[in-house]
Image (cartoon, rainbow, N blue to C red; front, side):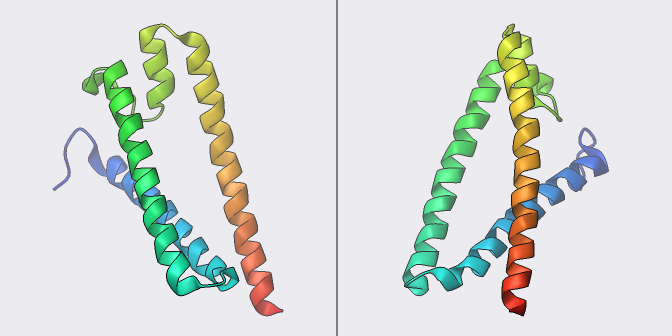
Length: 123
């Protein structure tokens, strides 16, 4: 079942988001060797992180849905277009630049973590 308004592209975008989420859990596993008491700290850290991230995601979703009607939310740049819809062009530019920089920063951090994990295991 694929909703016609999202199509196969929507499935690909969702799968990509899920993939990056699992990369985060892989980082937790790689860094768990550094924890003093991993059997206690890792599950606690995962649960706290999931609660915080879920709360933030819900708050952001409610905020965006309050700014723009559901049908008008942009699939590619929700907040910049939402701010433009409300007439806050300066906020649209800030969020557009910030989203771009966050994506680049996250990609660099994940690449460096992968390289460091590979070199530390080979030593």
